[in-house]
Amino acid sequence: MKKNARIAICVAAGIILTLLFLPLFVNGTSGVVRGVKLQDQDVSGWQAEGLQRYLAEQNNKYEDAALNLTYQTYTWSIPMRDLKLAINAETTAAAVSSYGRTGSWFRQWWEQWQSYLNPIQMNCTVAYDTAHLNEILKAKVDELAAPPHNAAVSLNEAGDIVIETEKPRLILDYAQVAKAAEEKINAQDFSPLMLQPSQVDLPTLCKEQLASINTVLGEYTTYYGGDENRSANIYKGSAAISGALLAPGETFSFNDTTGLRTYEAGYLSAPVFINGELVPDAGGGICQVSTTMFNAVLLAGLDVVQRTPHFAPVGYTEIGRDATVADNSIDFIWVNSAKSPVYVMATAGGGAINVKILGNSDDRPAGVAITTEPAKVLPHEKKEIVVNDQKEDVVEEKGHDGYSVVVHRCVSWSDGRALTDTFYSVYDPVTTITKLSPQEAQKRAALLAKAKTEHKQGKDREASEAKNKIQT
Image 1 (spheres, helix red, strand yellow):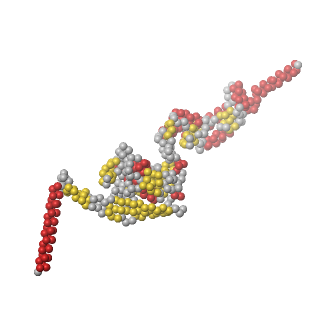
Image 2: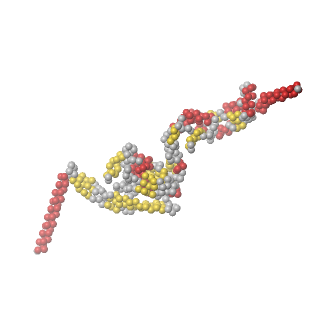
Image 3: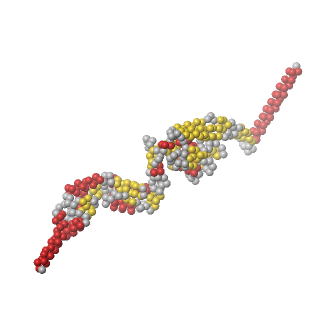
């Protein structure tokens, strides 16, 4: 019995000694202890040289790393190279190498046993420009707080179409974002940082909706100058129509798109036609915007639903090629008769307004011919009236002839489609009105009566002389 007890004691002592010294035996006196991982890399037994080489490789990976701020499908990247992110190799190597190697004998034993039984995950210690990170995040938070911006189409210097990504409005807590960003960078965790805004306003037009836009279907330019208010109205009107996207079959209403052209809406006073007369009113010049768009639509081969000519021909386009509009009454309407979406791009400045209709190359006309028949003149009348309280003897309001004009359009496409339509314009003649004071009217009446008397006397004399000749 005593012998068996001694054997049991020896076995127990052996187990205890194994528990005490196994990790120390396995790990030796140098190198990283067993079970230590650095950035998911098992570095058990690595010496200082191997650690330094690994850390250098990890540093190279940060060249292309980025922290991505994400909300739904939107992502904003912060490249780590902009923050000069780098591993603090000395500090990291020291921390990894010292695990289970420093402190009391018991602490070393305890740490080595922990890593032996359950691997220990350690991260690199990094250094980066925290001040610059905060600057970037503050600017981004402020930028995202701006009103939402729809996706848009622009042209680069080479004339190529560029689709600009839309931007949502996100109200974010800067301190919360900054804290989360620093935690991720410190942990070298470059998975997306999911933003949690307190308020969201999404754009109404996204980049995906503009994917088929790749060419200019038609464009037209007109020129203006002089009146600053009129120029401002043209700029405002062009901005109102620019950015419109029409699906196939969708209708564009100029009045619905711009809204009322009133002083309250920000339009200024400039000359407009009202009841056939050119008078100052809000929105003067807006018809040059609708006229420019009308011609762009013609050249794009799209169907025109409603178009009305001005009261008289205008100087910024050919006769018969204008399109007037008026609040709550006269509209310019066209429809996207193409097979793909079309996009309106309008710009104004420097005395010129340009309207482009953009779309897919499959819808671009192969040819567009616009011809104008010789204008038919509609003669104007002349009229005199008496104005009792008029001080001047004569005041003349000059009229002008009118015109009847017919414009034909022929459009063809490479797939065999064709379109022919006609646009009629009638510019009414304006009567010349001569206003007379009562005194001038009496004077003219007396002169006319005298002329009639003299004419009659002359006729009587001619008749008498003719009669005498016959008798002779």
